[in-house]
Length: 179
Image (cartoon, rainbow, N blue to C red):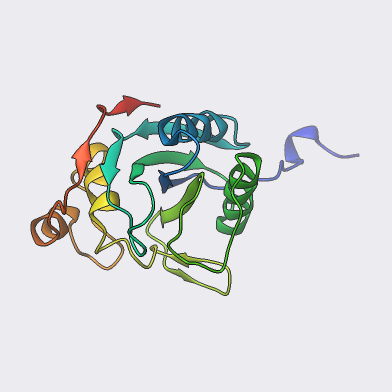
């Protein structure tokens, strides 16, 4: 005879705080970011906690493309890093993103995992922290909107990076939003 109290329920997966970079420069970039944020709100086992203001930035790479609109979202998620990556790439496809050989070309939407808790991940499909995180003003300043006291996994405070990385023409378009 078994005691119902002794039956152990499976533990829930732990919840992690993650930061997602958003960028677009085609097909109404502000609307693309708004649609991507709405899609993030629908992610399974995840909750959008905060969204930075929207920022206008010059394109990286070829300059013969429109300026970008960028933001950063903070989520709490139980998705594994690769499951989250798959979900973000699905959102990109739904919003018309076509991956091309040109690394810094124009795009309808770009969603990048910037940070996944305090983890460092290096795999064929995913590098976290994002490889450009510490040099890109269009990531650092929106990140500071929602996590000004953030310390990166390497121990560097976000505020120290902001002192080293100039605005480079970055312009705040909207204020920070709550989740």
